[in-house]
Amino acid sequence: MDRQTSNGLVTTVHWRANATETVGEETYAASSYGSVGLTAGSTIVPFADLTQAMVIGWVKDQLGEEQVESTEDSLAAQIAAQKAPVSASGLPAAWTVAE
Figure 1 (tube, rainbow, N blue to C red):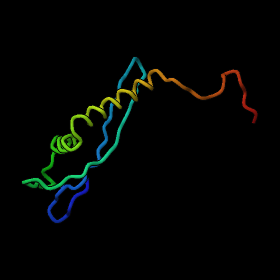
Figure 2 (spheres, rainbow, N blue to C red):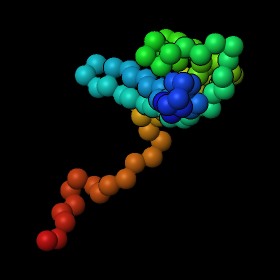
Figure 3 (spheres, rainbow, N blue to C red):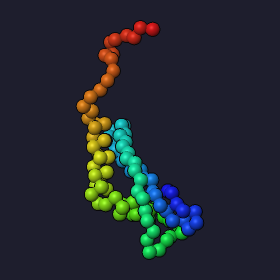
Figure 4 (cartoon, rainbow, N blue to C red):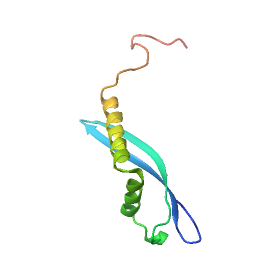
C-alpha cells in the first residue's frame, strides 16, 4: 500500500487475487494483480488500525461488482486452461538431442 506519511492516508492499494484447485495429486494455480487509487473518506482510519478485511472491502468497492466477478472468472479460466491445455511444445520422447 502507498500512503501519506503525514496522516497515514492510504492512496493506493496494490492487490493480488489467487486461486488454486487440487485434482488428485496435481495442484493448479492462477493469479491476477492490479492496483486501485483511493481518496479520503469522511474519516481516516489510522494506518496501524487497518485490517486486511477492511482494505479488501475498499478494493472490491473501488473495482465494482462486475470487475470482481470478471477477475474471479479469469482465475477460473486460467485454471481450466491448465487442466485441459489446447497447445503444447516440445520434442517427441524418442528424439535425441545432439551434444
